[in-house]
Length: 530
Image 1 (tube, rainbow, N blue to C red):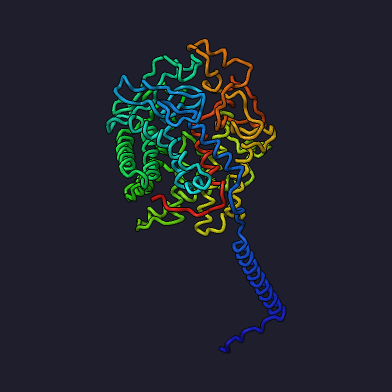
Image 2 (image 1 turned 135 degrees about the vertical axis):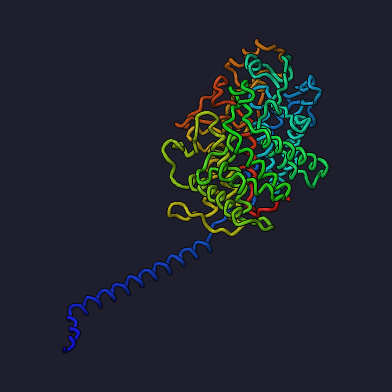
């Protein structure tokens, strides 16, 4: 049987294949050109990275000098080198019934209570600011002042931790305090001290205090080794207490729920462990935040706002430091991958503030806005994290951050921080500085007992309310106070009775000191904490 010969291909088929081949060459060529162009654009972008202008920014130097003074305004105890002429000794009997000296520390806000949870957080943020930007503070002669303010808090925290599983977390009765309006120097009301312990544990407040002491131990390590070691010993014992007896302190002590009600303790445990790693170098703490509890506690991929109640964003940025610059030791692959997850979540927060915001998360004037209560806490805290992360990028030579198809430089993050700082300092629709004592137009009716009552006036608990309700501006300047801030429509009602907007807090001042320290000079070098 004769074999069948192969049919000769139709000339039209050859034309078709030639056309396909030609198109494929064109596509490949176009792709190559695109890749080449993008590569060179990226190279040019990297080579032309923007940097801030050299030298000290006088505006931020002035704001830093003013903002640190609010810690002096808020001091309790026998005052040393007092710079606030209308303040005097107060709280000298605090802790006496418990045979403790709890006279130092800071009053929380416009009242006369020492709330341990936000006070410890104030110390942690202030210590972090000193560790990151102590050289900047030194350039403008504010480092010593910041260190003294921090030690005033840590002296109190040491005394508030008299044994391994006991921590005093409050001095004063807020229900009684809020029925009075008087200067701290004149108060005669009973001031009970409240503790967490094994029977009534509080992992959140104990872990936050551990974080404060661990971070502060690094601040004082090269100045007073014995004091630094004492802080670190307290931090480690408090962390063990917090981790061993897990509970939310405001559930253990329901009476505090109306004031600083905690949403949970997992963020504080991660936050404290992170600071303890920085303070000790002990790999156990890396394991704690990664393989042991990362999946359960870290909420990777879901960025949150940094605040006195939620430390996750701060933890993510602080652990990013290790990812940017390395640990100096070998860790497991899983631990390394988990650290990358912290950095990715920190990057997600940075992208949130770089990209156009969702409705009602930024005012028309440009302020990051989360809630009408204590508005500036969130904008200043986010700006602080942004400038820290920006510095990590710059020092590590990380040229860009990728957000939804766009590339952002470290300077883009710095500009976000600058926009928030400048809004606080008066570049806003009200043309008002929300830092008391800065500029020509700042709040005159700050919700603050000591600032509102003339120094030579004798008042008892209830008759002081005439000063709360007075139409006259405060006779005393609560210098350095950062008030609560504006509403979503950028308005601010300057009224002493408007505690929602007009009451300052110490932790807002700590955030602002950190922000000003990060912006005051153009130096970007990130140094080791140890």
